[in-house]
Length: 171
Image (cartoon, rainbow, N blue to C red; front, top):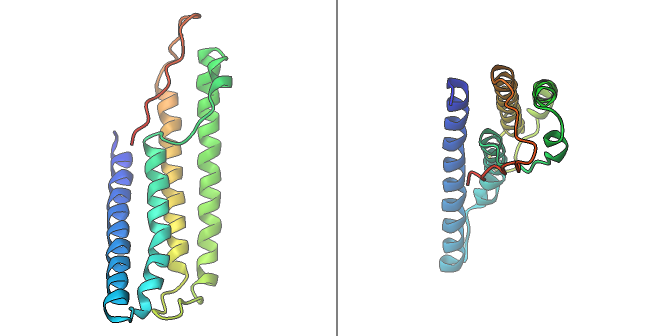
């Protein structure tokens, strides 16, 4: 694991744990208050709504870092290793460019959504959009790393009668 991947995974793990823990604690405390006293925290619904995008984006980026997304590889398994390598390089570069484009478009929207505030806490909408933008940047970095790995790793021919190994899920 190189430095970029290590940093991305570290940031996403911290965000995942913090957002999950805070959401859980707030929901439990609000539920206890509701049943024990008949009241609830007014802001208790807003905080999970604000933290949920952070939870989701960190999970998406971690899944990309560990290769745990669903893939269909039957077509790529049927082509020669050299072509597979160039297709991987090209597709990862296209993916990185698309994530970069989405991150740039999200950045341009930050000023617009900054004026939208949550009703009780008055948190600007740009916080959530910033989370999405950060996730897209991290996904672009991981795609560039995958393109580099495809470039730096020479193609390995497989035996014609060998079955393709299915990668193990990283849970």
